[in-house]
Image 1: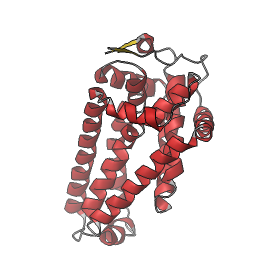
Image 2: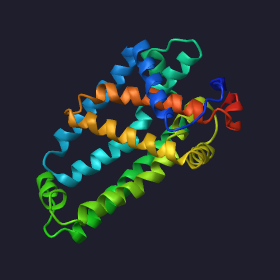
Image 3: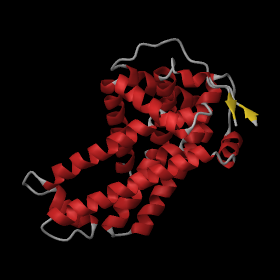
Length: 262
């Protein structure tokens, strides 16, 4: 058994619509303080994105499935960055060696949660494929088909329904994971309690968390539109910022008082 002391809660910082900007500022500070592991994470994720593009080629549904899974599971890939922010908040410097040690620890909770997120991504792709196949006037086989017959059509309908369905399916995934993943790094609580705490936090601050979700989506989109090169910086920036969001939003959580990790 190893011992792990959860991060000390900060003073109760008021949570309002300005809070996400503060989290971004603090995340940027963490990235600048220890850029090597952060940018290494970003470069790895960018390379993985290019590999997905190469493997999927011109097959739209394969491409959509791969990227949906990639976006949903990306927070699990950023667990090392949460660990770095956690160490810096405690006055310690963590490097790539400690991050690799975290990954090699084989924490079954993170593995199980990653699998659950992967299943959620698969569910979205299957639902999306069913909707498009049912309502599209022509078969959608290539990205250009989707752009021409779904996105750029003049009539309001299929694309808007597709976006709404995506938002409805993404919302519970966000609510389940936004606080849960950093809490799994910070405390020994089981997955079920981490997810419950994440939902409680989102329900307590719906406007702030909605804004935070939009910021994450927009910045991730910007990163992808730069041939994914922007993800090299954006992914670690958002990961560090998400850690500070977790610290502030769960400052009074009773689960953070647990100190033993088995």
